[in-house]
Image 1 (cartoon, rainbow, N blue to C red):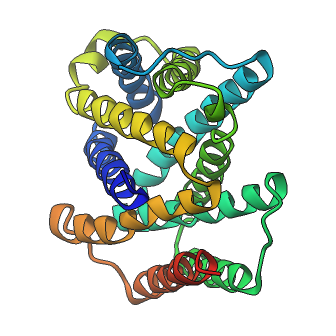
Image 2 (cartoon, helix red, strand yellow; image 1 turned 120 degrees about the vertical axis):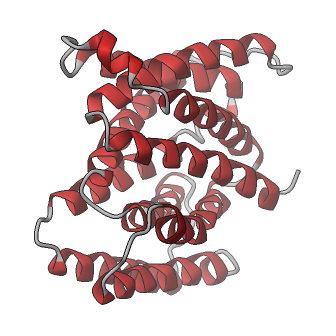
Amino acid sequence: MSIFWYALLVNTAYFTADLFIKFSSTQQNAWEILRFRSIYAVLLSLVLLGISPEQLQIPAASQLAILIGCGLLNAFGLYAYIKALQSLHFANVSVLGIAGALIHYAVAAIFQHSVLGIWFYIASLFCMAGIGIQWKKQQSNSGLIWAVSGAIAWGFGYALLSFPMQTCSASFATFTTECCLLVVALLMGSHSSFVVAFKQSKYLFGVAFFTILGSWLLNISYAQFNLNAMGFMQLAFFPYSLLAGFFIFKEKLSRSEWLGIGLIGIGLVVYFLLVEAA
């Protein structure tokens, strides 16, 4: 299967999970969402581990440590993403998250000795300008701080996954990272209303199901494609997030928000079309 179809499947799965997260963010706090989503996700990843046709491959201790570290980074990224959704428009948070794709290229440059050309820096400047414009216009910067923090955590968390995925089966990697998220979620937050919160978690099974599907497909793709090309997979989020914000969540963006999103979009197009073509 080509990277185009992997990109479409991965982003469709993650996008659907994000819709369920957005619906849940108006009903529960971030730790409750993370906790119950992770309970479902670990159970589903166990099923995946049992039915997956691939041969079970457990990485060496050093690679397993990287895998666990990636899981912890992704846990923080998810928490920050939920916090951002609670104070920003869905489209803003999603587009800011896409900018984290640039980290894939930076990680490839550091660890795989890829050359950072002029187009990469131009793309980065457009993305930073788009973030900066929205930052300046917001009455409260907390949502943007959470969104940018989540993008950075996810950027490194997912980019570094490419290394243990060279010697690890996708189903095992999915199970391991989900266990990391569950441990963090169980250790943090209040458990006083566990039963009540569980009854309110109807959307979170959908979050877990589509996250597991997306994670499994993504982990397979890390073993098949170059890390530089993996950033391409996040581009599909750009039209998804705008359409969902407008038609599903009825969000009305200001001129500065549109301008910021537009600049980030230009940066991403420059990155994916020119940087990857170079």
